[in-house]
Length: 220
Image (cartoon, rainbow, N blue to C red; front, side, top):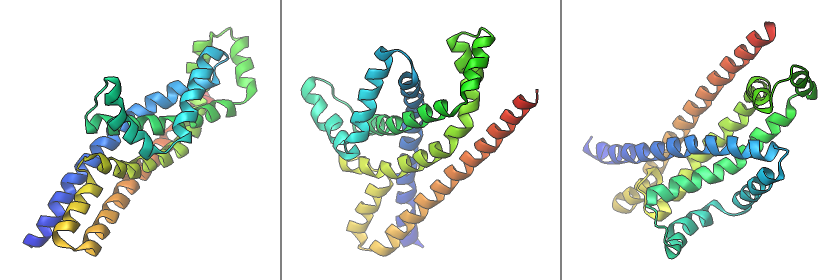
């Protein structure tokens, strides 16, 4: 029993760190994705171009290299981040870059007639976005957003390489101490899988509620 607690309790503490990073990076990524996606869908090139540069850089380079650059290179420019801050920021920026394309694609999928109807009602660009486009685009964003959330969860394992004692790093330490590789990493797989299932279930619940909300709006 003692051997089990000596393995499970450290892993649960590592899981708590993993969940903390996932939640913080996920919240930031959602804001970044929405801002960058709207900028990329904008008619203003002063918004589109910077957003496009950001998206292409973070989609076109390795998340691991990004992590090392923010943690090891930025201090040479006078910007020193803690390991937690660097890991969370990189994961948020990386996930936000992919998420911005989800936002942009969902906005473009809204039928053109909706834009024309909003113009006929003399709605401003902001009103059109808030009242017409986003409510219709939001349900289409949710399935790929759920995939990105699970991908973010798995990518938290990268922060172990900058000394954050999250789930994967904790498992590596336990394996070095006990040499029980099979049991430890099987438990780690089960923990990641359980959290991924919770994310999937949560996103499906949000999808159903968003679909019902859209149906009620359409019935009015």
